[in-house]
Image 1 (cartoon, rainbow, N blue to C red):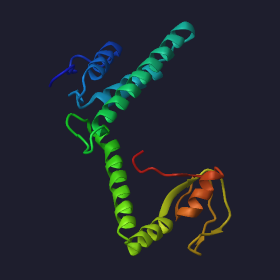
Image 2 (cartoon, rainbow, N blue to C red; image 1 turned 30 degrees about the vertical axis):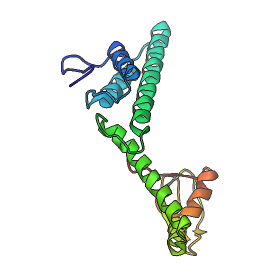
Image 3 (spheres, one colour; image 1 turned 45 degrees about the vertical axis):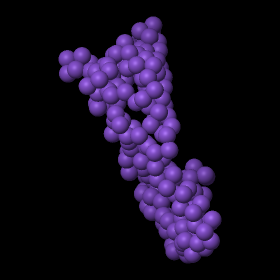
Image 4 (tube, rainbow, N blue to C red; image 1 turned 60 degrees about the vertical axis):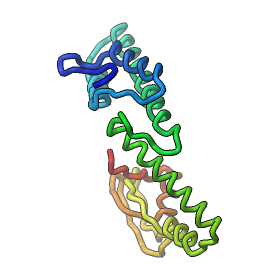
Length: 190
């Protein structure tokens, strides 16, 4: 493994994280790093947050968590920006978590190209299908508050729902409930 690596015996700490960040900043390409970096950092932060300190030790711990958070945020931002700076996404040396982020970037590019191509070539049927599919899609919601039965934009009846109920609702209804803070979108990756 090139660059700064973590061995099984050397756990991630602030100094090692700083070295990884510095190496990433100093190079134009995405550097090869330990594939378990984000898990190790998550474990480090979790351990720090679970330690029961009082007074000044608690403030030091909180400051350390903030420093680590800022470094990881900068590291992720730099690595993602390097990967997308070219016309084609460069997955070389990216970790699985970073590829997960870039998959949505690639899908975004493809969708833009599809709409632009359909518009410029007069493919009205494709544009209409895309619009209809988007409007008619459903979103899985978790309710934060009870709500009486509603009639969805698809004219189907939904509910009533209690707090913590999960249901699939039409896109337009889901957005309205999110805006009113009655429900939140369920992200299956969580």
